[in-house]
Length: 616
Image 1 (cartoon, rainbow, N blue to C red):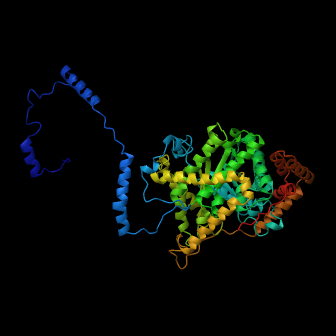
Image 2: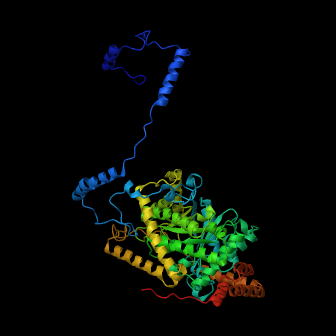
Image 3: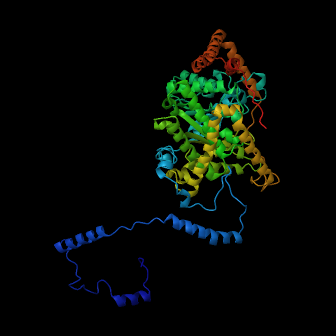
């Protein structure tokens, strides 16, 4: 009984029958020996021996034949009866990539599995379970929020605000003129300056963009591709003006030009010379910038263009393998550059398929680098990645639903083992995010990190029959694509022939047809609509940004040494013509305040321009 609890009549009757401990004296035969006596010691030893001799109860694994028989009986007697009582909502279930989902997964689905070969341990080959042994128990993923709009001073203020809110890395978006290699005063830039990202035309803009930010204490991601070499050189120049050597800079340049031809369609020159410029950056960074990732091989834009998860995985890895082949053809050693290659994935709505995609990506990359290219350094086998929630899933209708979508996608990225994450803001389907919206998106990551408990467990879904089966199937289907691309002569040839572009277009068409038919539900769009919703606050870019940027550019051109600029641009042209690495000549040009557009005009003159053939 608990202390202070009254005894019941039944308690009293039971005590009277058995007595109490003090009412009866033990007989001589049962009386305990004194604690320290030889007899007591002998009894303790005998008891310990009996415990040691006791056989261990080892659980017996249920034989596969027994499971198979039980499964067939369950399907016949239980599942079919359940379907008769409650018919299935659709005749067949598949993932968003069209992978059939069985009624049930069991140990039978893992009968072929070699645990150490296929799954292994976190931080160990083939890295299925994650790139680090302790994952988020040791270090959380880097929390990034895309920032870039208006003039450089506008984005600089946003950078400082986000850092104060707990963001741990800068992520820079550039406007369309910069992405396409034009200055703000070019006719092609009209109406686009500062609208989609920050406007930059010269080193002066970069100096303002990163003013007051110690570049040796943050990592910076820059989303720019066709003109990436110019952005890299401007970043180096700003750092060196701050007294920070290039070797101490940490961050990532997107620079993945192949996915531009596949999906995003922002290029300057044809594919082969464009890939040559990427290899120049990889070679330079391997030699000069050991902490810098010279390329972020990006599935994100491939997925946003309409690819399935399997296609995103396959075409992105094909791009990565293509860059490795080009670097090897340059004469580089794989272990000198592969450890600094990084990846960037989209995180869509199909929760489990997205997790499986991350796991399959690490496994394929590790095996390809070790087995196909002979990499010896374990860091070369390691696929390190940034992820971003899917912008294409955000809806203008009922925009607050986007907060829920982003939270689920962010959780999938974390369970998949990302090292860096950007969560989209609820208003990004309309415009660049407001401070309030971007703060909520950052808080979403922080709640996942600090309140859900997912940071406490390394790869919590490992061993799930469904997740492991799905990981295998995603890998198998991705490898089918990789084999076809190899048979075509590699990814550059496949891009020139329009193969990935055609596959993505067909997937996008199927998806849209399903939405319009109501077979694929988009909450708030084709089901659960409301008549109208309250308007939300949007970020608007002042048209005066264009005028201010053009005035600054004119000032730069008046103040610079024109002869020095012309000489530097001739050096870029000579490097393009002779095959010399172009990074140092471009760095000399931007330090002379040659503009982004002027350097890109040299590339256009040297390599020509590019127009894609249509695919129907």
